[in-house]
Amino acid sequence: MTLPTLFRYVAIVSTGFCLSLSACGQGDQQPVPQALTNTPHRATTSHSKRQNLAYVSDESDALVYVVNLATGTIVKTVLLGGSPNGLTVANGNVWVANNMPGGGVFRINTTTYVVAMLNENGGPATVAFSKNTATVYALDYFAHTVTAINATTGQTLAVIADAGALPQQFDLDAVNKRLYEVPTDGTLKVIDTTTNTIVATMQLGTGYGGNGVVLSPDGSRAYVAVSNYGVVVLDTASGTPVATLLGCPSPDRMARSSDGSQIYAFCDDGTVDSFNASALTLTKMLSLDPGHVFGRLATSNDGTTLYVPSNSNKVFVLDAGTLNVLQTISVTNPQAIAL
Image 1 (tube, rainbow, N blue to C red):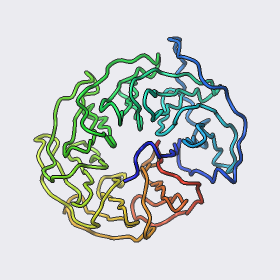
Image 2: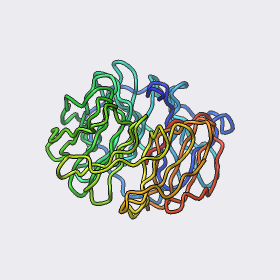
Image 3: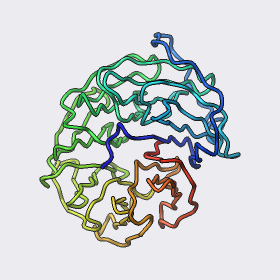
Image 4: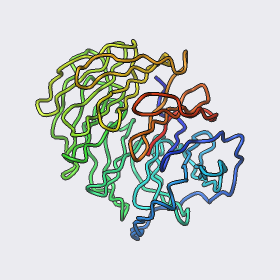
């Protein structure tokens, strides 16, 4: 599996896609950010103004592109420095993980494109946003921690230790205010987002570490992709495995349909497995991009569309209910997509 330090990431604000950076050009650059002040930023609720924009991080060139999805053009280039990787959009800002030793989290204002830097030890691989608590979580691949950041002030609320070895990915349960995080030590960590503490450590029981995780809509089940094993289904109330779903040999990334009836495993051989969530049976195997590896996935805000990056320089836009390919977009080395 490709290490997060090699990743370039794409963040989609709504239904849309990343375009080829070589085709788009460079755009306007912003200066390298200064240290963050504690001045609060106004939280924007004008989603309609942002819904046609995509934020694309380019690790090699240390910048983020802002792409207008309606016209397919780059409207801004924001120079960050460092090693920008995973992104999330929250409270009128784009939050970008700086995945390098001694890195931190960049914050880009989506109106002014002013950049601030949050100091953090280690190097976060990706970030996520909890709407319930207005908190940004940074998953640190090097320090094995999860840092909770106030999305309004930018202040660090907590550094959650014991996140496990080389944490890979997380998913948020907004109903029960839980964050599920997958390290490579064969466990699933559960963080209470109201207290920012680890409240449970679930054993996968596979002898292998997990890669990706997705939750059922009500948070009652967690589906964890385990390479060389299968997809482990855990009951989140008891913390025990209840089934193993078998399909491709190396499931990596996870997603689901908007209603939770279908669970999708995206595999390292370019295939996609679809499982019935009720019957826990394999219903479809799709040879989407044979011989290629998928990056981190994204789902549209309404849950009906999946955005799947591939190292074949494509982003596949899929119907989340049928897995039908709606569009194939040429993209320069996309490694992840995040909303």
